[in-house]
Image (tube, rainbow, N blue to C red; front, side, top):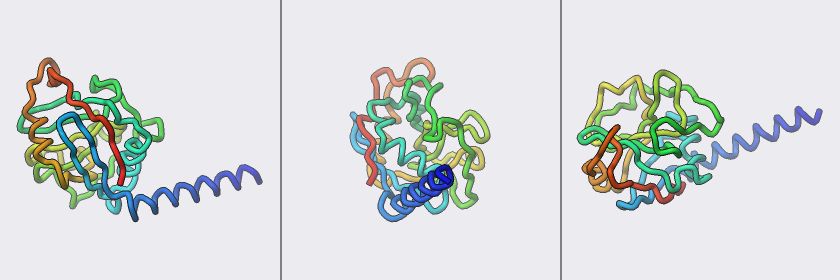
Length: 179
């Protein structure tokens, strides 16, 4: 009986979290040492990915992390707490499945998408495109877009990089705030 009640409470809490997200947590602001980037999340199309990103943002997982990979005229990548491109987990502690939506494409600059190492290997890492990247469609989950601060994204995309496309001078996400 107690186990059943606990499961019901978890389901209710999860539903409340999802409703909060759908009705008021549509944006994430990345405060960086280069300026602010405001991201709109596509909750209705990619709810699991948005929940992961919003909860990681809300719990401080992205605070004081770096954009560890920057490729000029392609994308900027962050979300790895280790800053190496090899780390980061989802809110569930494991990798999670892609949410590929036919209508959501890498068809412009400012597309927010999950970085992965293959099918269904999403964790905490994400990237923002600097140009259209249609070759990524169907391989990476698009779950949002830049609505303010594309100039900041472009500036980050121009920083000097060293080995493994890592910026020579750290580009830091000081905080990630959900609104």
